[in-house]
Amino acid sequence: MSSYLTPRIAIIGLGGYAVWHHEAVRQLERSGEARLVCTCDPVLTEVAGKGPEWSLAARGIAVYPDYRAMLDRHGSELDVVIIPTPIALHAEMHREAVRRGLAVYLEKPPTLDPVELEQMIECDAAAPVPTLVGFNFIAEPLRQALKHRLYAGEFGELRAVRLLGLWPRSSAYYGRNGWAGRLVGYDGRLVLDSCVGNGLSHHVHNVLYWAAEGAERWARPTQVRAWLARANPIQGADTFFIEARTDTGVPVRMALSHACHGPEQHRETLVCADAEIDYVTKDRVRIRWRDGRLETLEVGDFDAQVENLRALLACLRGERKRPPTTLADCRAFVELHALAYLSAGAIQTVPETEIVHVTGQPAASEYCSLKNIRETAERFLAEGGWPLVEPRPAGPAEIGGFEPLVRCLARLAEAELHAEAAG
Image (cartoon, rainbow, N blue to C red; front, side):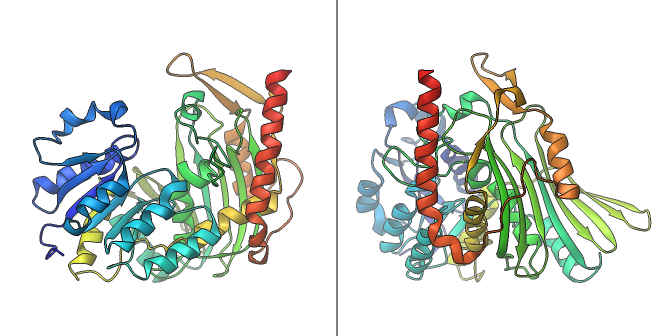
């Protein structure tokens, strides 16, 4: 085991989101803070073009087609494994890394299966330091400063937290791999790819963080109501409206969709007794005081992969007790996600008359956008009016029914998609 002065790292993956982690490690290599020892990818020929760009051979980095072979060969030489792979692979890869005594940087979310999350938490007890889960924005300095001000009482009582997340995703996005937009993978594993389960999960995690007092707490849902829909021809949902009660007494409301077009919108709103705060990721914070004052703060540059990795390395050196988000910290998010499905009970397929088709880039792709989605989302956040019937509440005691429900929804979606293709 190294002294952690220059920790030795492996990255599982060369393409997709792993690109960001390779760039982060390169940055830390240049400053002498870490060293990449090896990497792997099951489709080396498809990502081979990255090799010369990153000078893998010149840097003495070993490359493998299989992560187990890589860990078998280099496990004793490593300190950290970064896992930015599809969510369904996280648990087994995390287990293999921990079994070899390695620290883990695991991309978000760790899993979307509440049962599997508990197994991962139990496994993590053997890790040299708690696994870091890469929810990107918790460690932002401005977010931490604002949360301190919030719970110091500066803005008065926190009465509600709201989230607007509109991130357009075209048909090219859903065709980029074999698991995009699916509830269940072709191999039978739960996938649950969606705006909540994947693309906008950072912001859902943020909302639960705001709703709990303290730097290391997340509000857990005690009751959830949700409406799920799909405009795209996919197995899963591309739109979620969620309302939840939490164990801290702070209610949360979220409207999230990939079935939209135009500019992205990511806005977290804190409704307090003395102020209303809008936190726009990677942009600015606006604090509108009840007495008429307006305070604007710039979020500033923040390289999430670099700073999260630095936090994990600080844990290895004993300079920090824990990373910004641990596996146990993800319980709130994973439970909320599961309860949203259980409350909805179904994914509504939006009628063609309620969809706008917009040509995308490349030109062969298109956006399936719900009509008036932005106005509908804003109205839901402000007033709580549901698009159709009000969904029933679901609570934590029902989570055991999550997996059977998901598999049932996947079968129904497949039957519907086949019928559409045939008709």
